Length: 450
Image 1 (cartoon, rainbow, N blue to C red):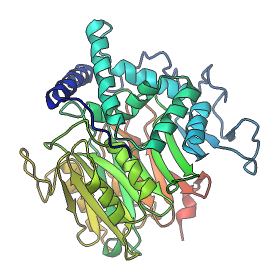
Image 2 (cartoon, one colour):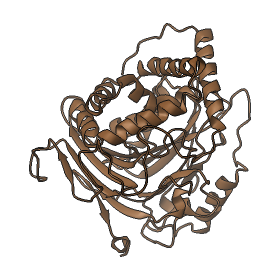
Image 3 (cartoon, rainbow, N blue to C red):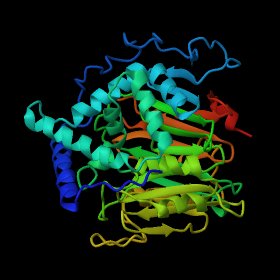
């Protein structure tokens, strides 16, 4: 990880965040789900984009390099379009190879993402709007200094292959944190249950990504599998996000380590730290135990007030989980109680100058989720299709973009995504996926039954 110290003064950074917040607040008055007028906006289900070399959506794999025709060939990218609202992309090799494959196979969608985020961050077409966008771009460049070298190489390769500006693709990854300082945020919920809380003691983990679009509308939801090779390669991992997003919001690695982020409020936020979602990615890429994941959070430098759910095996080899609450200045780690740890958007342990923490948040989503899991104590089972804590009524919000329930040991997950029609993801069918060595495959729900 680079450790450069930006030359920005605290006052300059405060001004930077302030102008970005103005842009976010101005755009926030645009109703969620308003049809995008971005140049590459989707014109409806099943429509093939002229720029998309893959043509119409299909389940047939597309490999990169193009010469690869089968999985036995040497390929760096493998794309399967589940349908017009979901794709699976596996990329393998060096950071440059993985980024190039992402940009080549999803060129149209990466370009659309950048265009849509740029439009969102430019609330007016006059000089003021352009200045606000440039200010946000400068904020992303500050945060860039804290990204790991392999991430930067992968981002640059993706941008080059998709023919987009590298800094604008960077901004598409970071704009949430750049604008975080009281501008807008996601309102996610998450939990990890294991031991006495589940039927067989094995972990069941869930998360809702509740986020009012902010430029993601019309994007292609993506299951991204990263298979790093070469010097310094980390663990293979999977993230759930959108085409063009290299970090994601829900992640699981091949060692069974899970990470997801929840926005928290009231703490010290700054640009001079690791972006929340790239910290999430760093955990699954570099950590092999829950303790190692927590240590990466503690080491920092951190950017914005967040709750990070980290689940998997601990150094003793048993299933475990922590909810690490942090801001730019400090960390407070929430331990599980009776095999359960969970969070929404209220700090439960991290004390800061405003908004005192609450050991038992009054948030309706938190209380509903807690009741659901505790009512099934000792009987919670990933394979029981009648159970879905994360998809239960009043646990997710109307801005729910994806909803996932995960089996860490079996490397399986149930996933629902929003098709971009203003309906919550959790109200759509949950598909079942299994993570294999070099691909992610959809399996039948019946395969979960004993």
